Structure formats: structure tokens, C-alpha cells
Length: 390
Image 1 (spheres, rainbow, N blue to C red):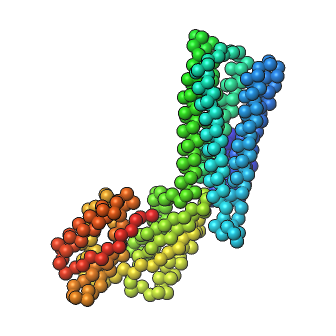
Image 2: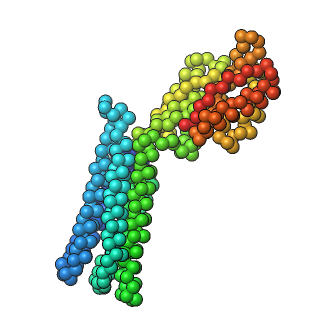
């Protein structure tokens, strides 16, 4: 069903990196959400009026309120898909994160309201009213919300959308809450045991956790969380596949919304490569990154002397000293040697340490490395610049 809807209503649905295609996915997701919730509303309001069941009518208006969530998703994704302009040169993609954040707030509100009402039911239990009509309505809600959750999750994974994944989690929370109501109702009908309040507390805990998870996943890119290295493995492989590239380091990634990735990276090249050749090489890499991966890449050339035997020997020595600490997250780059004023050589390099290292740990590791370098060659003076990996 989902594949049929996508192929029918989304032109060029395979090009998920396109802002227009992403907006089309979001519009379809919102339209399906609106349609399902309105259908549930009509069915429930009709059954509620015919049977006089106030609870069914109340649940019908709950579905009507869920339409607002789908509308917010559609509007948010539409705004996020706007092209870049003078005031927003990197586009409006982060509005999508704000859309997901709005959904998380709605989920949290539902969770806290459910917690309060469930607590009241535990303190002041009330007899449950069982009817097969109500049971059928609840089962209909479960099926509808299960479909919406699955549909939005699939759509969200296809275009990597936090907003659609948040909508999926919202529908899943509704499904779980209704399932708990069905279980409580059946147990009460069969045994006269009322666990409605207890089930409500358990479900509210899950709903609140879902809302917090959505908020966390949404806030991380908004406040500038680090990109997973696995996400940019393809970029590193692309760069290092070019002849003349000796290595890479200091990659920094900026994200302005799904599909709006910007990166800077230092590319190591032979020091005897001409300036013109280096420019052509890096320019080709940047164009390929945009064409193949949709990443706006800015490169910085780091010359490496590959013919000086002294540099090669010192790099091997540093690899032996620092390489054994690789599991701890330590690495090095930009090795250079400079003649010292009083004789000997200054070994200049950047030392990368994990973010969780304290200042005292950094000083201790510098002392250890300095001591081991001196132990290998007393004529060498280490000059380290400590930095963190991005």
C-alpha cells in the first residue's frame, strides 16, 4: 500500500535528496495522517451518537485533534523545503527539526495528562463500562494508528526525516494507549479486576519517554551535535581514492537540515606538488563531493614531505609511540621537522585527544609521549599542538 501511494503521488520518488521530493513525501505523509484520523473521527462520532456512548464521542474528538499534528508536519516540512535566500544562505532545513520538536511537546503533554488522569483512577477507581461496540471502536483505532505509525516510519527512513519519525512515534504512542485500554476493558469484563489506572501509568511512562527521545534526537542537530563518522565514511573514501591524496584529518561537519550537509577537511598531499596541480586536485574532489554525495565540501591542503628520510623515520617513530594508544582515541598528523636554534630538531605535530580527557590527563599524556620521543632520540624536541576530533 505504501509503495503504491509513493509511486502514484510522488514524482521522481527515488531522488530523496531533492527538497521538492522530500516535501512531496511529507505532504503525502501528512495527507494520509489527516485522512486516517478524519475517517476514525467520522466512524467514532457516528457510533457514539447512535449508541449514546460519551467516551466514544470524546475519543472521536481526540482523533480530530491528531489532525493538527499532521497539519503541523506538512506546514513544517513545506517551510523547511524553501530554497536558500539572502537571509538564510544555507536554506531552511532546520525548520524540520523544529517541526519534530513541536511533535515531541505534543507527545509529552499527552503523556503527562495521561499520567495525571491515571493517578486519579488509581486513587478513585471507577467501574468500567463494557460494550462490544466500544471494543470494536477501540480495535479500529489500534489498526488505524498501527498503519499510521508503520507508514510514517517507512517514509521517515526513506528521506531521513526526524519530523516523520516523530509522527510515527506519536501514532505508536496512541496505539499503545488504546491497546492498554482494550486490555483493561477485557480483563475487567472477564474478572471484575480493574487495572485501568495502573495500565494508564505504565503507558504514560512510555509516552513520556517517547516524547523525551524525540526531543533529544531533535535537539542534538539543532544545538550542533557531532556527526557520526559512519555517516561520512563514503566522503572519506571518495577523497582518499584520488591519486596524490596521502591522507585526511580534521574533518568538521555542519548540518543545516536533512540533505543540507557542509564539511571542511584537511587533505594531505605531497609537498613537491605544484600549487596549480594541488588546486586542480582539490577542486575536483570538492565537485565530486557535491555531485555524488550532495555535500558542500571545502578542502585545505596540508603538504607532506614524502622524500625526506628524516621525516619518514620520525613519522614511523610517532606511529609506534602514539599508534599503540589508538584504542584510547589518540592520533596525530601534520608532522614537520624544524632545525632548532641550539642544535637538534624540533618535531612539530598535532596530537588529537578524546573530548573526555581532563586537562591533567592531557598534560600526563603529553609528558609520556615527550619522554618516549626523547628516549628514542635525545636530539629531538617535541612541539605538540593538542586538539580534539570533530
